[in-house]
Length: 388
Ligand SMILES: Cc1cc2nc3c(=O)[nH]c(=O)nc-3n(C[C@H](O)[C@H](O)[C@H](O)COP(=O)(O)OP(=O)(O)OC[C@H]3O[C@@H](n4cnc5c(N)ncnc54)[C@H](O)[C@@H]3O)c2cc1C
Image (cartoon, rainbow, N blue to C red; front, top):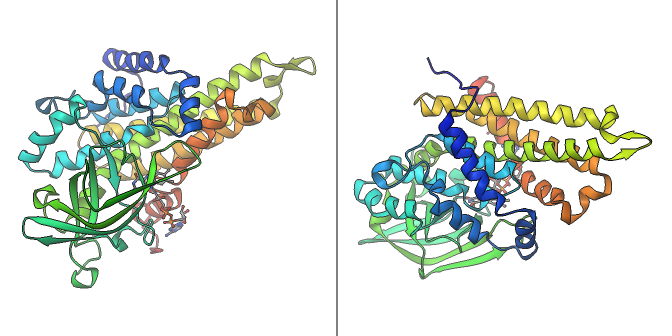
């Protein structure tokens, strides 16, 4: 029977402390300055890579640490709980799984060791499109085989870290939707070396938070046929396969955010005295903070369950989805409680709260919006009628 660990092992504590030590070198001022300029946290990501943390999930035979999702989650949570933003590099951990599970031995040997050392960055994941959004199977970008190459045409929207990556995982339609039995068939995944590639235009988008996000335009972009991962036409199921890890890691970032907001809220409302007593003694201030803390703890428990099941090789779709939902909502609740108890100071840049507030909001919408998580719970767990 799979057990949910309630405490960290000595190794996990050491892992957490090591990540926290790196985070201490990158305080609020660092993230704030980048946020204003919308610049990528190069130094932070390089430090994490050099220390091996971004290769945590890569098996040892390919130069990684061979750790589980439980440890990957701990790394993400620790970064966020220390005021940082792992969104700059989280995708590498979960995109890599597609290559690991479905790539050929030759592809794994070619890329994974270099990703582990940081010689190659695999941070970009191209799925979303302007005309399909959450309805992934309707995506319109095509990859047509011509000899030993595929020719890609179409558009992608909100694709992050393309300018900071060497490699991109791309989902495109290889068989027209009217020629497949199931709409989920006919989509293929490619590992594309985007360094200097022709036929790709990248237009950066200034977003609410610092996220290195872009609109992409493919105009006859040619990729070698050996960039195809697994079988042609099976890409959708490969992407779905990686979703549980993505959900668990993103939930962990939200849990870290929730903890950061909670700590700030408690510290501030305990020391600021108004009307002759600490702010936090007023239940109108205290209860929202206590409620948010309760929600963060509950989300962490569900995340731990999801990660434990995943690491034990058990199905964990329900738990991973519910953890993502609970954690994103809990972080948002904690963010609101934190801003509220800080009054006007919650809006001042130098407190970092408004930055974290903007950053944590994303996880209610992406990588999957919480409505679609609820649709999954309703339809797949509770067996209620399908809405789409
Ligand atoms: C900062 C940022 C970074 C991103 N990075 C990436 C990336 O690197 N790669 C990538 O592929 N994508 C990325 N995305 C895209 C992200 O995954 C999508 O924005 C998200 O999946 C929602 O798609 P959409 O924006 O087209 O919204 P839509 O699909 O148009 O949905 C809009 C809203 O409608 C609601 N909704 C939609 N369908 C339903 C339904 N059936 N039932 C109930 N409600 C529904 C939801 O609340 C949803 O938020 C990023 C987005 C952002 C904002």
